[in-house]
Image (cartoon, rainbow, N blue to C red; front, side, top):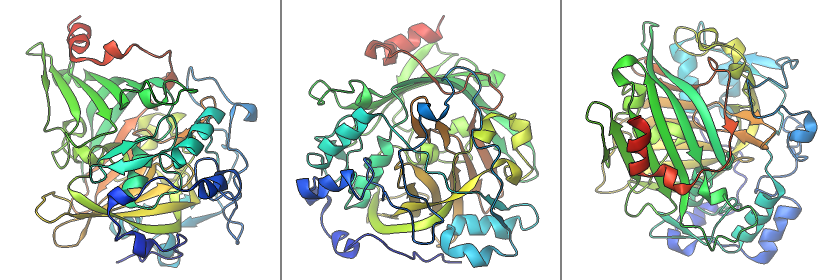
Length: 456
């Protein structure tokens, strides 16, 4: 079933889609000024919709809202909310305009068990004032280069708050606000069509975002790195001691910088094959590496087209998943519907189609990006025969102490043809969940340091 894009709100996008990426970038000061009036500081529409089902943005959910600290288990600040209504296989066609094709396929595959509980929309997304200031500056300075594979003139905020191309939306997603330096523990569960849950990975992750290191800085000291990460695996036993190091820059023209530490060899090696449609061993090969985190790495194999905006039901404010164990969260073929919160939000729609002469197992994708955070909310993929194949539901939670709505890596990924699925980067089994920590020295995120730390 093809899900058409309705309610296109962006102006003249059909014309803009034909303009080369290199010619798109900074907007005029007059257009940037709308970030203080009709748009939020990050570029979303400040007003609600005319039906009143999407409220106006009034600053988000911040520490002043009665926030918790970063330490310890997180809470669900909206636990008292009740669903407005429920979407099931029986009535899904009524709401198909606001659902992705992949989500509609979930209703078809699991008509007896899959359902969507729709809650009141809460526009909880927020960020520090300094990030808003930097976003305003970026709006008139940032531009794409190297056929959209690099960003120049952006630092410390959304690069393109008033986007004119699919590449710009993708860079907004890649550099989205998730904090400055974060530690977390998580698990990746690979689930078979028969309902068996297998622990694919249990790991400790140190994430750091140099793009946001100096809140008041102008980027003059920024070396181009926007994300540094170390994943140290401790389970299952046969993978214990493995580690991954990544250092993503705002220039993918020379690929990504990723290293892998192999415990049996006690050495680290560059891993250029960790990307694109290489099966992701962190997820037991159920998904591809470039499907993690709602989409990572270079888009060089695709043409990206910005289709506009639409209103869509997406998982949002899913803090409840952090208050229960993973076993409580999962059912046989998907997450238990009673544990998942869906809301109506406006999303930017980006279509990725395979470039001539390039290859990828997923020749077409559509990603839906939350207007308030720029993070991917849902991503659908089709096979070479044009049949819907996979869908990925990101599971963002509100972290008011940062403040942020965090879409890091927790998601529910489905192979719609085989029935295999993932509950990825779940944190429900841990007492420390996405903890802000002091900024680490850049030397911590180097291959030499990785060897020293893992060999201890």
